Structures are given as C-alpha cells and as structure tokens.
Image (cartoon, rainbow, N blue to C red):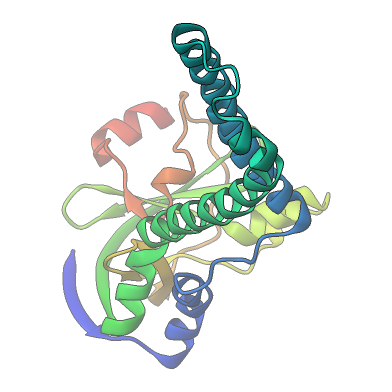
Length: 235
C-alpha cells in the first residue's frame, strides 16, 4: 500500500459540509421540549416548597410562633411560578449546552477535516479478485489480493441496491481493476471516494465462503485475514 496526504477536491469538501455545518447548529426547542423543561423545573420547585413547608412547620412547633412565615406563603404561588419560569430557562440552557457538546464530540472530526481540506489517499496494487455473496442482503463483496498478501474488502454498493429492488446484483457497473485508490477524510475516517484504475479483472463468479463473511465495518479496509486464509475459506 502506498499512502499520501493530498488536497481535498471541492466535491469532497461538499460531502463534508452538512456534518461540518451541523457543529454550529443546535435546533430550537419545540413546544414538547419546552414542556419537558417546565415539568423538570416544576418538580425541583415543588420539592423545594415541600421542604420549606416542613421547615416552617418545625419552626412553628418549636417556637410557638404560629404566624411565622405567613408572608412567605401568601407570596409562594407567585414565587413558585417565577421559579418555574426561571428554572425552565436554566434547564433549557443546560440541555442546549449538552446538545452542543455532544454535537461537537460526534461531528467535530468532520469539521476538522473540512477545515484542513486534506485527504489520505491509499493506493493498492491488486493481484487477484474473488467475489462472495452477502448472505442477508444479497449484494456482492469483492475480496482483493494485494501485492503484499493481504485482503482488501470492497462492498459493491450498487449490487446491494439492485438486490434490494429485486434486480440482478451482477448488473452492477463496478469492476475491480489492478489498482485500487481510496480517499479518506483523516480525522472522521469517512470514505470520500474509491475507484479502480488499470486493467479490469474479468467478471467474478460468486464463490462460497465459510462464515463469517466480512461485515460493513470492513468495507474499503484490509481484512484481518491474510490472503492465504481467504483462499482456505473459499475452498
């Protein structure tokens, strides 16, 4: 494998833009979300008022001052309403802060990639091509022998779409060739592009493969099994 860091194309930056822009956006609260915030604040205020009532009752019993705290309790409904309103705003701010923190944690790498405008380009020399069927969805998975005896896994996305629509997955236009070029966003590990160059391989017939077959996490990556193990599983 040959690896190089090269400039990102405008089309690749455009692919990253939705995730990058989302880092700056926290959706405004809807009615349902505001009601949740009010309910949470009301629970806290209710607990505080109950505690205040208990304290007031204890003080009256101990001191004999039966009118102690009467002024507070006459104003309690207004104070409670104000506390609920302010509490709802505080809860909303806390929710928004947490939402933004979570967005940055999840989508920050996409923004970093968009700002750096660089991609990691991987080139593999491919010596052999085999194909297996994904058992659940029916699409094609290509197993490609690299020059160093590893196995590069490539899911044929078009064949999965064809299988889902009831068409023949073999009608997919993807044809592996002697060189595979993969372009990755380095921080987010988003695959921005995969293409083949050089002499294409003849169409591969599907072969049985001992389970488990590669899953989607292996797509466009080197499998943990080397080519000798792949051949053993194919026979």
